[in-house]
Length: 168
Image (tube, rainbow, N blue to C red; front, top):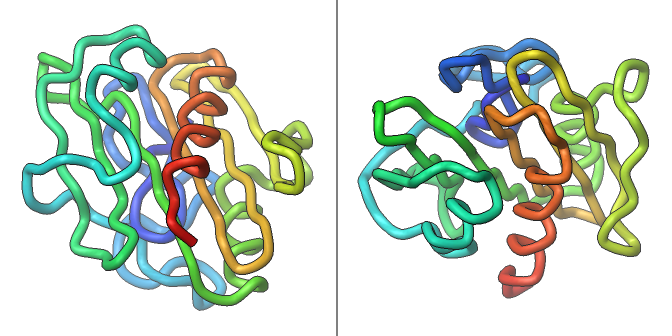
């Protein structure tokens, strides 16, 4: 799966390092003129998710959290004790076309399962040997979570919690 980075998601591999399979390019401008993928920055608290919630939801201890410099909606990177990323969540708020494109990049329509949870949000989810991604958009907002776990329900749980925490 891809690790979520920047405004687009990247697939989380077994090591959970940001790598863009169906997501945007590794760094810099994403494909199709999309915003660049977020990059881990300062160590700090995620404004949408607590470490305990992520540990319970993803089934792994969280040793560190880093946030991107994107404001007012930074991407959050949650690390395992071995120093590898286990889960990321990315929030994009801007225009509707870009929000939809970011979701389609993370969970391409042609290769993912349709997602519509929470109600009113649309996107996709998929699982691979390296993890899972759950990506949805509603209007001008996109929320994308990637996990190194194969069960997409873990990424969905994180997306739903993130959406409930957003102050839009």
